[in-house]
Amino acid sequence: MLRLRRQEEDEKKRVVSDLLSRMHAQQQEAVVLGEALQAEAQVLRDQQESGRVDMDWLSQYYRYVLATREAIRERIGEVVSLQQRLVGARGELAQAARGRKTLEKLEEKQRERYDRRLSRLERNEQDEIASQLYFRPVESGVVLRAGCGEA
Image 1 (cartoon, one colour):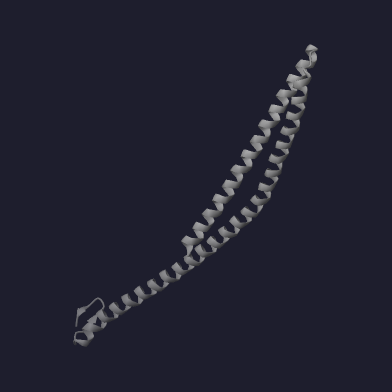
Image 2: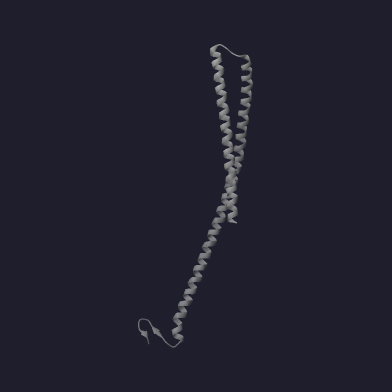
């Protein structure tokens, strides 16, 4: 049962890890798109400073900016969605970890009870052996006195 709980917890860890990596990838994509927008804005500024503005390029630039901003919004929306899923996945992971720890504690207590029982049985067995060794000479008619040898 404990092995199953550990497997369940490991699966939850994989889910959290997957969500984190996907969230990071979306954030990186949004950053790359933002940097591309900045680079294109610099090109536009350079064209304006030189005094030449290509109207076809300007209309393409406008469409590009709108499409890129929309792509950035989508990435940010995906990041928000992943963050919400991540909160739930972390909660499930915490619950799985608590379940595993509970079973580990129960197993540990059961092991301690078994060890105490085994120790008690060994002690009783040793007492029985000692009693038999002590009473065997008495039954055979030979009495041993402490420190005196045979009497």
